[in-house]
Length: 243
Ligand SMILES: C[S@@+](CC[C@H](N)C(=O)[O-])C[C@H]1O[C@@H](n2cnc3c(N)ncnc32)[C@H](O)[C@@H]1O
Image (cartoon, rainbow, N blue to C red):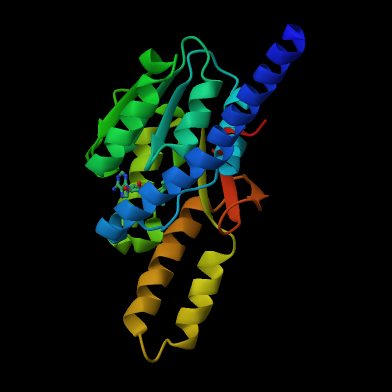
């Protein structure tokens, strides 16, 4: 009888843990993210955080990086949905740097990291990526930057910095965007090109910078349907790093 009771207790505990992790926490994260979005819409650039499924899909890539003591950089971590999964894939000797520029979000990131057994392998930088100057480049960079709300010159600067300073020659660059959103936006802006030429030009310049960066680089992508709305995750390899 007591064996049955302890089995039942364990099952209830497991169920509660699962609900907390898969329902309560994502809902809390969403509410907090939306709250910050109201205050910093132009910086955060999205009303909801990515789903844990996006985090899982991205973090899995760490295991494919064929180096010891991997250097990993996450830019624009928000409430840490992706950070949480990256932490789980860190091996001894790896190091994760996390950049976020909204102070309230940095506070949430610090709580997340401090509660992790991998906390000694992580450094949080409260700043913009433009003001970040690492000592060495990275093997894996994950960017959540909302580049479509950036100024086109800022976007150009970011890709230049990525190529010349941030990413190692053998490195992998991963970013994510809502499925088909850039194309849909360009389509919509093309339709109202006459009414809002400045919007059309803004968006076209950003797309051109991105396409120039991607030119001649091997790209792999996957779609995460379990996200609001579906997300495309894009992995960009350096041409020198094709295996
Ligand atoms: C679209 S949210 C992505 C958040 C999170 N990675 C996710 O997937 O839910 C973009 C994040 O980038 C941050 N951000 C915006 N501009 C930035 C910059 N110049 N440098 C660093 N982070 C920036 C925002 O504060 C925000 O947290």
